[in-house]
Length: 305
Image (cartoon, rainbow, N blue to C red):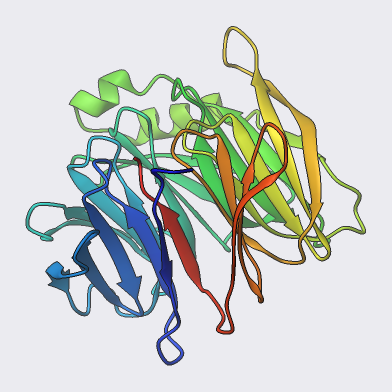
């Protein structure tokens, strides 16, 4: 942890907030309310900004692995794609009927996945925002986070069902290579959805233990689930074909309703509670950094270096 920097965002009025480091660690994307700011991570100076990027508050920001593009998810029922060099909007992703809760890029930066409280995960072409596929589950009520497997061939989503019980759905994705080069017609879209329809629900915790949030590491190999009184850390185990996976519980720590963020290398986990911040070594579970603060922290990000 000697070279890892933590940037902590404190609340401003009642605005929602989110932050994400650029892959090179030199810049930080900060979303406050409907506005987006690109900030120098050393000086704190605002490099670029876009005020009114959305019509309502931004809930989540994802930066493409190649650093060329950014996606934002908002309460205004849309996600939007942005050019990182100019902050020009490249596409507005319409289709969700309720607030868009989460957004993520595939490992090759070519596909964007969005999840929302309308029970649907949608896949989009990152180049122009064209829809590729819709993923559904028979009992899904709300999608709270999504993550691609390292190969990009599988998608994981943390969801609530109609009884309020949480779990993780996984889908094996259809081959989208041709659609990435050409447009989609209606029959191809339906074929993609049919190919991905066989999602699988995984129950990882007791039904009485309501999970408030789930976070995946950037490589999809670790996952946290935050409950009312504790935090669970799972190792995601994939088979050789990457068509299925299982979860192995490796650590449980007392941490009520905490915000979590993995370090880019997956070796450390930052925990944010109402009283401050802790950073744990994932292999040992031992704390390697702590800070007690008096104000509520609403977002955290760890630089790549």
